[in-house]
Each structure stands twice: as structure tokens, then as C-alpha cells.
Length: 431
Image 1 (tube, rainbow, N blue to C red):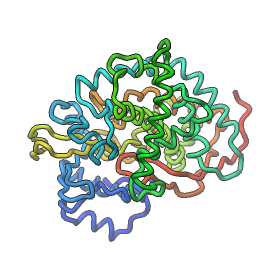
Image 2: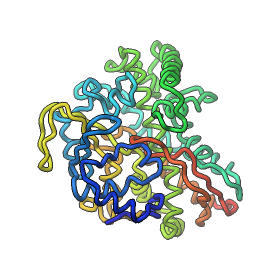
Image 3: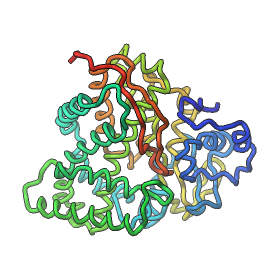
Image 4: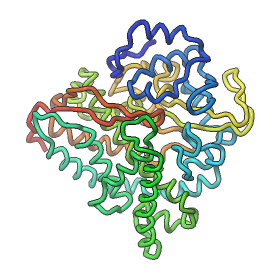
């Protein structure tokens, strides 16, 4: 079934283009085009692949030849088989560009066991249940403050005023990063993920220079903390763990980029996407206001709907047959989470945004298996808290999208550069 284009915010596709997608030769389909994500017209291509060629080989693309895995169960099978499908940087890494975002860095998500497991374990205490409970009060206090300072009846950019500010404050807390410099974290995240053709892309030389500045800044923090008692922040955890205390500079930078991008983009873009989703589905927005307790099931549904990490790459290290296709040793394999989250064979009515969905966590936005997002519960908590506080201040549907979203130019991160909104009601006195 064709996803409802308006509800997905898809730029209206005329009948001629839809017919062209339906009739084009399968071998000519290439979904790894950033412009399809920028203009939000990729959906019909994924629908065609899920139906007609779910294990699809693209011979020619700007990133070279690659396989597309577009169905939920097939992605799950590959995610669970890390012995055949490698994430390691030495085999190409985790992004469609070799070397992890095209950078010469190593990060634990782009490692295979046992090295992956040891380095992931070093930072996992940051998202322990005890630490999440401690962080929730901080997130709630900051959410209240940010929301209370928003203008009423005026158009503003939700990406800058809410999404970036909340996630950047959280990142500064997790790293114990100097507060006045916290926007550097967002800047480095944006630079690391920017690709040629994007509005914010300057040059590769600029990107490398900014990453060098990031490394130098964090190296100073490392040197301050490595000779002190271990603290509850990510830099201290890396500096004092046996698996990470002797990292090379490019490993340190790689893990920094992973933690910054992971802590920034997923939450930031889903936060923005939540306002867009509720505006595109006003009956769901009203339901949320009528039953604010539904925020608990809405959050995972938002994460499915947004799918902030559109894709992840694996590389076959031996021949493997799946779905009647033979993936050969050395082949690049793209796991399209954005497509799997719309797979009707695994998710009931996936084209609908349903905040009281019976199984809201039936999605693959966080990946699966050993590489499942280490911060998934933190991301969910941030989204839950900000909407709990928003509903207290505005208990009726009054947050209105007043212009088209400016989407990211990327086949990896599904996000927003800006989204204009207006709040059409004064704050409630409810506490």
C-alpha cells in the first residue's frame, strides 16, 4: 500500500513520476541519493523494492555498488549475524561512504567483537537505570525553562529554539562539557555528518579542520580527568576504562563523533519530527491532549515514524545467501531502517501514525543485536519528558507548523535543518 503522502509530509509526487517509479527497471533503482531524502520523495522507491526486490543490488551509485535490504525481517536476520556481516572500519565501516562518514576514524560501533564489546562497555554506565533516574530531574528542569521562554503568537524555528538547545544541554551534561561552549557540540555533529551537496557543507578541508579542533578540545578535557578520580561523565569513563584509556587519536575522535552524533541527531530530529507528525495527524494530537498519559506509547511510535537514522552499512566477509540472492564476500550491504519501519509484513498499518499503537516498540530505529543503540532509553526519556512538560503548559492542540520543513541532505541522518512553528495559545497555569 502506498503510504499516505500528506501524512508523511512528502512533497506531492505527480502521477507521471509515480508511474515512472512503478515501471522503471529494478536494476536502475538507486535509493542512495541524498536529494531523495532532502525532498522527501524516497518512499515510492522503497515501497517498490519491498514489494518487488527486497534484496536489491544497485550496480552504479555515487558510493559504488551496494545491496539494499528493505524489509524488517531481513534486516533483523543480518543484524543478528555479525559474524558474516561486519561493521568493522577495516572492512568499510558503518556508513555508505567507506571509513565512517568518509572520515579516517575508528569508533566502537564500527568494530566487531570482541573489541566492540569492550569499548561499548566502557561508556554503558552513563545510561544505567540509576543514572537515567538522576538525569530525568535535570532534563525536566531544563525542559520547563526552555518551554517557558518560547514566544507566543510569533513564528520561530523549533529546531533552533527547542530541539538543538535541549539536546545540546544534555550532551554538555553527559560529557561534563564547558557550558558556555556547548553549541560547539552541535556544530561538530553537523560538520561530521555533512556531505557534499548539503547547504551547510563547506569543503573537506574545512571538515577536517573542525574535526581537528574537536579532537584538540576534548584532548584537553581528557588530560584534566585522566589523573583525577573517575567521574560520572563520558570523558572520565573513557579515560579510566582499560578498553579505552590507550586509544589512538583517531579512535578517540571516532568515539567522540559517535557519542556526539548519537546523542544529538536521534533525539534532536525526532523532537522536531514529533511536532510535524502531530500537525500532520491532528486527530492524534487531539487524542494526546485528551489523554496525556499516551505520551509513553507515543514516544516509540515517534521514533519509528521519524527513523532518525535512515540507514546503516555492513560488509559481507564471506558469501551469504538471503532471500534467494547471493551476497558475495566484500559486498557493501545497506540496511534501510527507514524502509523496514514501513514494512506491512512486520508492522500493523505502518503507514499510519498511531500514538496508542498496541506494540509501539515494534520498530528498528535503534538497530538490533550487538549494535543496538546504547542510548535508546535516554533518547526515549528526553522525548517523553519534553512532551510531558509541553502538555502541562499547552493542554490543547495549539503548537502549529506554519511552513515547510527544510530536511537534511543525507542518506544516513533523516533530520531537519529548520521547521517554522507558532504557538497559538497562552500557557496554562497548570503545574
